[in-house]
Image (tube, rainbow, N blue to C red):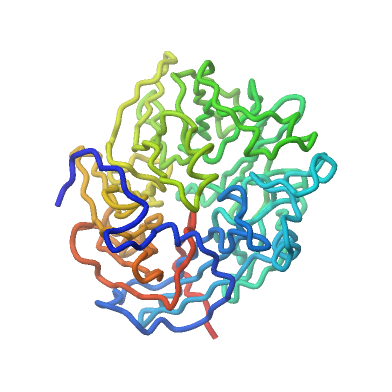
Length: 483
């Protein structure tokens, strides 16, 4: 069915009393097995590896972390070889993980976590020291990179998931430099672009271009008028596109150890949201103002004549940061969010409108269309029963949307689109998502036909355990070794 009404607010528990918040319970054990409970049939043409990253352990010493973003990074690997499915998970062996896995309390300063002991134990700590490597994951060369916000990537073996160590791109990425969790690839050139926010007397965005062979180049940095948190960006054929919201950090209080970075963030509606267009060829950035809003994730962006178009999931403000992300074990995650489109005009004005009003997050598209116009977007959302109980497909040409609803007590993760072949149509492929069942306290990999998301799943592969709520993932046609 096609849903075209505002979703209702969900309750914490299903009618059978099963609490979906149990998805945040830790999975301390590492697994390695063939998934032998599969309903339906895994498509024969679906061969490759899905990697997902997220906090696998959400407490230390039996006490929950103060913020969802501080859990220890755990990589889940789903290997599809054309005949079956193999699952493996491993923790990224960061200093934070090694120090805290058997500790009685927090040992490092994280995004929202302070160490016990007051100011003296929290002042003058380098943000990268709290690198949890828990946010996203990408393949680059022969490394699988686990990504975080305020530090360098961590390299893993893409087969065994063994941690190789911090990755510095041959020394070009210094220890103090951040490397965001959302790199973008230009499908025409094979280049990877990314950024990192640098805090100091003036806040700036460091921009990077990485050649397919791995050489990192520093582009001209962008000066910002105030210290902000920024999670994502978009890439067009001409620009790196940053949408900078007025979520302002009190860096002085962080440096003095009075607050964690997350605690220091405050919403300032007196400031505008800025759209910053950074030319890929090194020209002067262009800054355009619009009314304030908040976002985590950008889907895609492209040039349309003289306009720059960018799609993102928009919130009214940063209330999610002071509510659900801190109270993640009981929070409602009901802050309004929907897919919007911004159009930056040559004269400097910004036009914006809602693309789909359904509650949704984790936007995705066919990555072959990155930097170009796209017809379809895919999101976790359409909420009627839980935080993201379904998968939403948005058709921008027909201005319509459809939903695969998994039902009450189900939590669907970010959908990853996999094309049927290199030259297949934009929606001719599959959507892969990891779905949690509160009633079973177990997760499963679900394969949907991207052309018809409302249809029954093509395959449902049931894991032997749950997978804690993850953030982001990636797909590669490379079939990882499982032996």
